[in-house]
Length: 378
Ligand code: SF4
Image 1 (tube, rainbow, N blue to C red):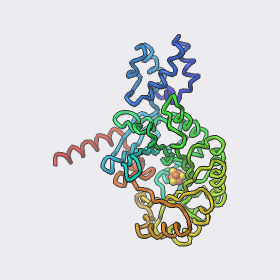
Image 2 (image 1 turned 90 degrees about the vertical axis):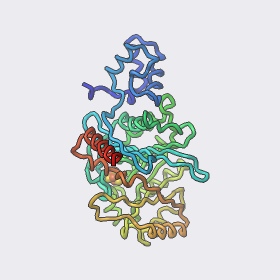
Image 3 (image 1 turned 60 degrees about the vertical axis):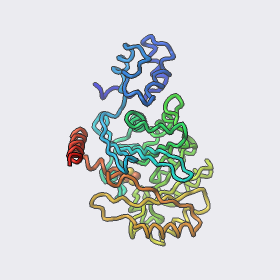
Image 4 (image 1 turned 180 degrees about the vertical axis):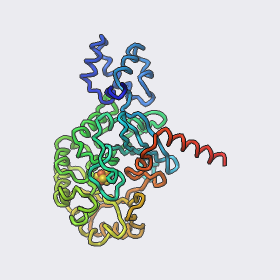
């Protein structure tokens, strides 16, 4: 049964070597296979033409080439953004997003892939479609790595810039990564492995809603990986509502864990702050945020809210964001506003997944192709 096979992207070197040895294959086959399945032009075991035909057939029987069974992809932003809903072997669905940024000024062209760490999420932030859909299950390391490989393979080939270093992976899709820390950390190691994709740890960001023990583990286990904290409010009263995990780890504890990470790793921590009109964009919240961000290696990243359907909230208008930015800068805080992507394809976390609930991905694909064909006839 296909669903019972492990994915080759999950294969640890020792078990793959033992599997090959049991078939009488030479030791060099392990490295050959791992390097092969991570080549961008390879779309299945049959493409590993350097291997004997019988071995390719045995591989296909014993291993799944990908833990992703099907994907539905929608493009936006003139081809610069693509969002996928992936279906896993047991029918759970997750999302990942590919974002290309063209060269601007002194900034080189770069690519960011946003991936999920869980199917659904238990944190239940009320502005987030994933949170509203509830928790499905933890993702395995292979299911995390295969999202990156999806964009690495034809027709996407997103890793073109990897060698130039303009390539980033962010754990900002569905799920709270540090509520699945063991598997997320293993996935980071696999992504990092020079025998596989070899993505530098400094090009990987783990974003957390504030799981303090997980942040402390990152200091010891993944000190080269970037840490982002989804703060979204400066006071406990408001954050209890916007990021309910705050009732377990309040703002002061979360910020203290961020400061420990920055002090021990000497790396800058990003404080993510979604801008909600009339709610967390007040002067009082700005002043509280200044207090939290001041005096250590932090950087505030403001994100205009992309409201979910039926949301009681809307995003802060541009003038309000400008005022908030000015106040933070006057308070001595380093701040940027995130470029929002894919609004026309519901690219905020969990929105496309919610839109496709109860429909097969194949039907969704066929409908989209049919409506594109009608559009081009008109
Ligand atoms: S914003 Fe992040 S932590 Fe909050 S519910 Fe959504 S996926 Fe979970």
